[in-house]
Length: 146
Image (cartoon, rainbow, N blue to C red; front, side, top):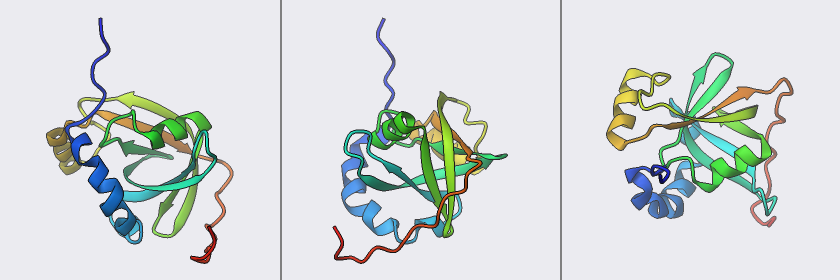
C-alpha cells in the first residue's frame, strides 16, 4: 500500500510565492493577524532562514497551518533541529518540541480560517511549545554583510 499524498493543491504556486511574494511580505507580514515569520537554521547548511507562515495560539503552544504540506524544507529543518524562533509584531518567541500532525477537521483553527484551509485542502499542522528560555531579539545586520 502506498502512502497518501502529503501535498496540497497550492504546490503549483509555491515557486512564484517563494521567489516574488515571500521577500516582499517578510517586511510586514508579522503585523497581520494570523501571520508571523518563523526563523530557523538549515539542517545541512546551518544557514539562517526566515519564512512567512500562518500561525495560531493554542494555550502556550503555537500551531502552524502547513499550506504547502509537511514535506517542505522549512518543516524538515524545524523537525530536525527541534526548535525555531517566531517573530510576531516585533516580538521574538523561542519555540521547541515540534510535533507534526494531520487534522482534516482543522479544529484548532478559527472558523473562517478553518473554512479557507478546507477550500485549499490543508490538513497538516505543526505544533510547537514556547521554550522556557526566551529568544534574544534579532539584531539588525547591515545590508552589505553577506
